[in-house]
Length: 354
Image (cartoon, rainbow, N blue to C red):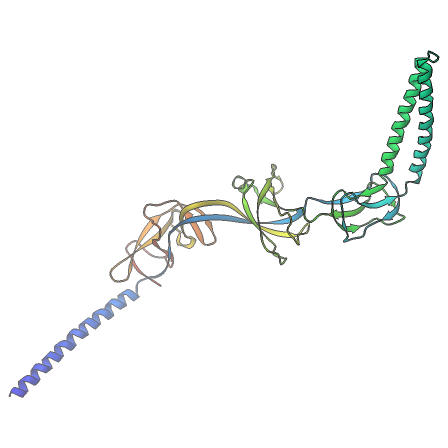
């Protein structure tokens, strides 16, 4: 009898325990199922940090010393002293032309000038001795001045029969040939100094107010194995091209190896920056039917789910997946926000996160 009673008590206890455990398990399973049907969202964070906005434009490299050399006087080319690819120094003689006729005229004038000076001296002496007239003295002096002026003109022409390098650089192309008739309108060669280069780009007029002298930029070379250049705007054009509504900017790239005129470049220009601002992921900002911008903030509950709150914001700038918004009392630094999967969510919803 006692054995039967004890066995019954044990069965009852076991049954009661199993029943409690089953109830807890079922409750947990029900809770898990309820959570599983909640919307699943991706999250990001609102952050207080610096923000920069950049624009990308295409430009090209130009040399500040890239010229076609011409002669100022016509003449037969006597010597071409350089070849393509050769480095030259400033004032080095590049091309010489036949100056025989000018040289002969100079010799003739030098003889006439020597005699004119002799006559002038004689007339001055006679005038001082009261044996000559002032008119004869003045005529002799004027003759000397006139011949000296003519001789100076011929000597200038003589100097123009040689073409010198106006600056140091590299001869890129040579067009002149020995025996050829050179003329002012005919280029002789191209001289380039690649140590004095700059990048030039045209930018839409809508960015004019945001780009100033000194604005920082990065120059990339997509077609060449060259490292980017960090520089700044050195000059801004004061003219808007009426055909394409653009203005021109220039930035120095001095002493950068490997640069050549007309090389393609891509410029990244910082046209807007703040040292500290409220930044959120760009994709977290949505718009309603009234075209009002808003985002969803998240607050964790006890059951590892999150309550959502709709916060209207004013987006200032966006760049590379981040957006700068106006400071908002409802959004604090480090606050969780929905960055993906927010479509269809309402103010009363609970959500779960990945």
